[in-house]
Image 1: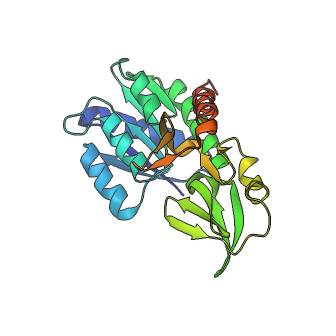
Image 2: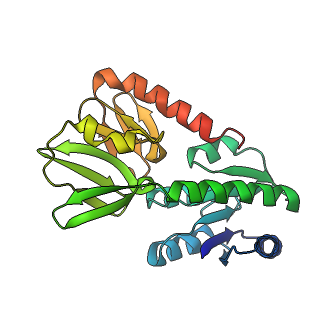
Length: 246
């Protein structure tokens, strides 16, 4: 069951978008979804914080209080990996939508055919991302970690510590090099090796400033001096590809 969140302060527009999404679900046999509608970013965030996030967000941008961009930033700070689709009457916020790693940006009035195409692409990407995981050996037994939930991993003493959206996970004592142990992560284009004992998930990097990577939860991670320039280049390339037409 996929969870959809719609947010628009214009109740008529919100009703129309709900109708379009219901039509999309009806047109997709076997696809089950639950729709939650909100008239403010504050209300959406409150539910996401208390009951967990959603799989797909369809957000208006121009709203009083928290606008759609601010709402998207706060969702990312919560570690929410849901796909964000902006529906707006203004084309002035495309660069800001890039900042919150939005999947797409559609101008109102939204055409049904175009929206359905974008939804197809967003759900395909979501399913692909969420099927990728690694198994790690911990003191409490094997753990399956979704790659999209891993912000970064580093060697700490004789263990690998995974910093995830839900907390940290330590492996048992490792007996190989960090690069060898991190190989399953590095096989995914989201992960980048930085130095000898650190790998970051580009999906969770909101910016790079000198030798510091700013993560989507507000945390900063120091980058090795020799690796910082290449990391920034890789981060930029990753998001250019993410925003390329699917």
